[in-house]
Amino acid sequence: MNKFPEPSDQYMPATLLRRLLAFFYDSILCIALTMTITMIYMAISHSLIGAEEYKQINESGQSLKDPLLSSTLFISLFLFFGYFWTKTGQTLGMQVWHLRIQNEDNTSISWNQALVRFFVAGVSIAAFGLGYLWVFIDKKNRTWQCIASESKVIRIPKRS
Picture (cartoon, helix red, strand yellow):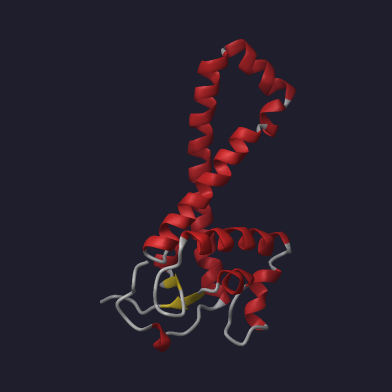
C-alpha cells in the first residue's frame, strides 16, 4: 500500500457536489473506454466468425446479450477504477476536483477494498443514488461504498 505524504486528518470530507462532478468526468472516460473495447471486441468477433455469420447475429439481436462482451466491459471498468484507486487514490475525474480515496491511516486502498467500492457504488446508483445521498445522514460524510470498503474520500488542496 502507498502511504500518502501529508496527514489526512487536516482535510475535509469530500462534498456530494464534488463527488458527483468527479463521477461525471469519469463517466465520460468510461464511455470512451467501453466504446473502444466494444469496437475491438466486434472487430475480433467479425474476423473469427466471418462477415455473414456476424451479420446474422447482429440482425437477430443476439450480440446485445453477449455475456463475454458484458464480462469484458465489467472487468475493464473495474480495472480502470481499481488501478487509479489503489495507486494514487484518484481517478482522472477525482484529480480535477481534488479528491482522493484513502484509508483512515493515510494509505491507499487495497484491490479488495476497490472491488467492494466498485460493487457497492453500483448498488448505490441502482438505488436511485441513495448510497451517495447517505453523506447527508452519516456523521463522517461517507457514502455506502466508503462505509462498506472502510475508506474515505477527502478533498485535498490544490498544488501550487
